[in-house]
Image: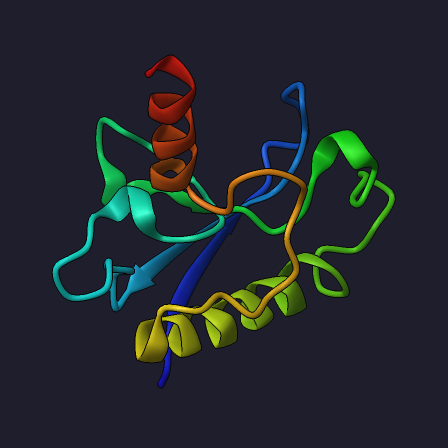
Length: 116
């Protein structure tokens, strides 16, 4: 599969972390699923198609502005897409995970159980 991606790095912004968007083909949920169930997205609830990939945990110091995007962000995006394609096949996310839920949908389910 071939993907067109956009790496946007607002280096003067705070926080100044790069964001990766999949332009073509657009990411999509599994059949019968929802966008919020796609693992490791910086979920944009107003326009889910425009959600950026979640490639690292900025609070853990996994990326900083001294790192080259070509050596970090681009390979991480490629790895994310690899795991995304496998997830589409069988629903199992095999990529690395930050602590906690792997998707907004999973987080909402956990919140609903806590509130019940």
